[in-house]
Amino acid sequence: MRYAFYFDQTRCMCCNACSVACKDWNQVNPGPVRWRKVETHELNDSFFPLAMSCNHCEEPACQAACTAGAIEKREDGVVYVDRDKCQGLQLCITACPFAEPRIADDKQEPDRKSSWIIPHPMQKCDMCVERIDKAQRPVCVAACPAHALDFGDYDLLLGRHPGAEPLNSTKYPYAYANNDTETGPSFLIKPRNPLTIIKAKQ
Image 1 (cartoon, rainbow, N blue to C red):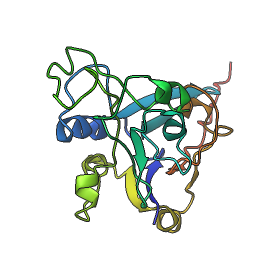
Image 2 (cartoon, helix red, strand yellow):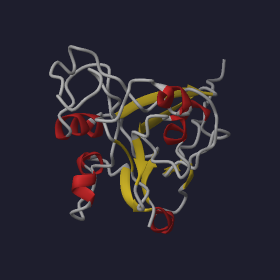
Image 3 (cartoon, one colour):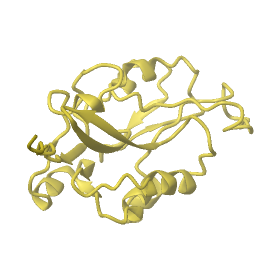
């Protein structure tokens, strides 16, 4: 079992329902941290939507970089952070190709837990583990009105969605923020074809 996200570029309306639902469910206050972000990228005269969170990579660069041992990976592929162990070294942020580990500020996270070593430990998407352990979909997937997001076993998603392909830096360079290290992201994507521009006759 390897849980993964699927994203259909042809369906996404960039409505941010997934991002809003994520913040609401996980009680992430307004501020710099977003566990799921929705962006539109311009490439070769076309626009490509992208709704992305932590990709729960097969070989997580964040986990390898964390010398505090705060990042762990479950047998089902979910990569999560133990915020009580985070020392704020931020090595995970620079190591992640997608810059998904996030640090809040005092306004976004005003109340420090007594078990934390630092005021603002790293936080990120955990695939809504409390939901998937009850056989429920992550809240971002459940909230998408266009059914642009899906979730499940990596291989089953490939079979369920013709045209889906693994995320990679060659075809989707705009998805990579820090570097183009291939970490085996658990993220499948159905690409949107570039727009055909028809020029009017002069």
